[in-house]
Image (cartoon, helix red, strand yellow):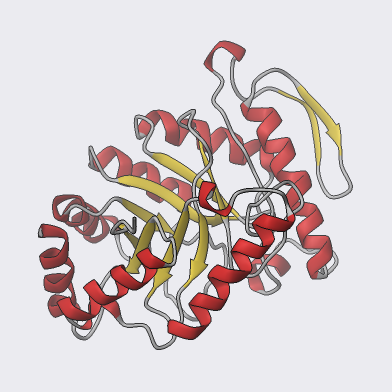
Length: 288
């Protein structure tokens, strides 16, 4: 039986906080399931400002009471697993368990180049992610971590008491097993003690998204994992997909992606020209 996906939103931390706080409260009032933040270090000249993701999410969590918060996605490009684990634990506490840390390999570009070092090929970025998430998991499990990796070193570090430990489960690519690989998918890490969150796929249109869903199924099968056991999140608002143009378009998108197995659909929080009309569409669909 096909279920209607939960509706999340991708928020942009590019305004002064008083304006962003209003958006977060409105998203919560509308019934948005979770607000996600793109975790970037370097976005100029596209944005005049882009606030640090975990700090922004802590403020959002403290300002709200129900809406989930999460990164989409945190990567080893400029994040070390030890402070990342510490930030995740702090956000878990501030949000009362509403935080999800989305993790991904990270691509080449400004974020990757900001801290120097060699340019990594895709295979190396995937290997680095596997190493990074393993160290993150060990840190979140409690106790002392002392590890030398190919890409990362952690020296005698404890970020949480053993009795207060939370669970973490990182997976590469499509998230269908320890060494699964694939395009445009990210694996959120749920620190609530439940299973890890959904793999993310960016929605570009009917044909491409069915192909992406089939690729995800094939990747899971190759890893020996039941594809139905992996929750899926689709981000809409790119390419030809414009779900907030009308209630009909939004409902059509929810139906189509529900049939493809998406548990969650995330839309870009309306901004700029047409924002008021798009907010009305979002409110109308969530209200019904």
